[in-house]
Length: 180
Image (cartoon, rainbow, N blue to C red):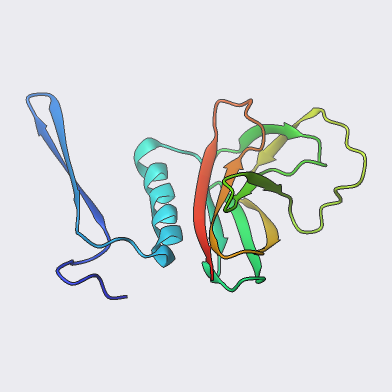
C-alpha cells in the first residue's frame, strides 16, 4: 500500500524520555490516514503490546478476511481470546445459552445489534445463572459470526470478553467494515 504523497508510512511513533525521575512522552505520526485494511493488524499489534508492556494476561481480537463488502454481502468474522500465559484465566459468564463474548454490530443508525455465534439456538429457553469458566494456559477460545450487510455505509463490530460486566478484567476490540 502506498502512503499519501509526502508521508513515510502509517505508524504512530512514541519516544519516552526519562529525566530527573520524570517521564516525558512525545508521540507523533506521519500525515497519512491509516487505510481500513490496516485497522485489524494495528489492533492485534496493540493487543500484543499491551500484553508485553502492561502485563495483560489475554490477547483478544476480531479477525475478518476482508473489510470491504458489497451491499447484500455476508460478513463472516471470528472473535478470539488467547491465553499465552502459564496461568489459567478464570472468569464468569451466564449459563451456556449466552456466549463467552458480547458482540455488537453498530449500523448506519448508530444503534447496536447483538450478534450470537453461528449455530446458537436463540429460541430455546435459557436459565440465567452465573457460571465459572476457564481459559486454560496456552489455549484459546473463538466464535464465528455472520451478518448480512443490507445497506451501504460503514459498520462497526464491537466485541467484549468476558461477556458480562461483572469481573474486574475486561477486554474490548472493534473493527470498521465498509459496504458499497
